[in-house]
Image 1 (cartoon, one colour):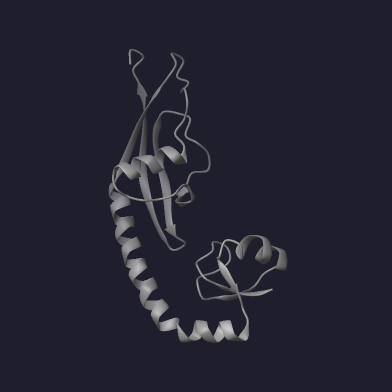
Image 2 (cartoon, helix red, strand yellow):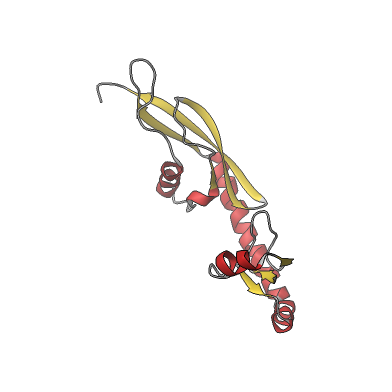
Length: 151
């Protein structure tokens, strides 16, 4: 099925690209989520006509995301978790914890933006990648420390 991408889709393409995808993928995933539009001759003409407006909007959006990426790169997050006597950490630091910390700093990101292969289950310093758009990324430093047993 031939479709026009309405937004950047990782591993598929950028907004405005015309791609051929499997019919089931388009029908069951992309179309219900309003990520693509079926590439009919009329739809292709409409996309060509609105290309200039869309380019300006995307440029402004990218500038805002670049600014957010700079703010994210300057931030370091710290978490304190209880640790047993043998050094095993109770609980972990997950994507949702990172999203909440950013919300406290008035930076809106989603769990999908956080590239964390697995939850952090050990005390130490980590670097976590935040992907705002396929080509706009930032790295945040995350420090996980041991919480004293008295607390």
